[in-house]
Image 1 (cartoon, rainbow, N blue to C red):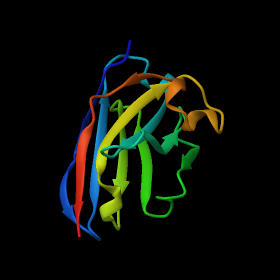
Image 2: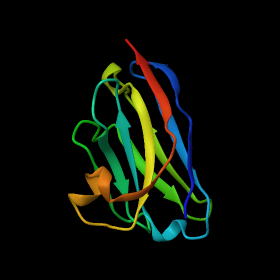
Image 3: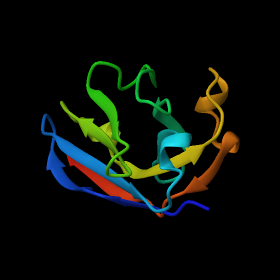
Length: 126
C-alpha cells in the first residue's frame, strides 16, 4: 500500500515557475514507477510525465516537453515536477501516481497506475 500526498501548487503568473512535490508513504517507493497527470475543468485527466524506478528513464507529454522536469529522490520517498515557463493552459489539478509497469505508451494511461494522490491546484494567470 502506498499513500501519496502532493504539495507545491499555487497561483503563478505566466512565465513563472513552480515545483510540485509528491511524498509517498511506505518502504517500497523505489519499486514503483511514478507519474504526474493533470486535469483541467471539463477535461479528462491527461498524462504529463513519468519516471522509472531508479529515475534513469523519463517520458514527457509533448505539450510540456522542454518546460517541465520530473525527478525523484528515493531516499526521501519523493517525486518532483519542476515546471518552468508556465502558461495559462497549464492550469489544472495536478496528481501524482504510482504504478508497477514501465512500458511506453502504457505508462501514459491512467489505468495502469495503482495509487493516486489527492491532487494540488496549479493556476497560471495571463
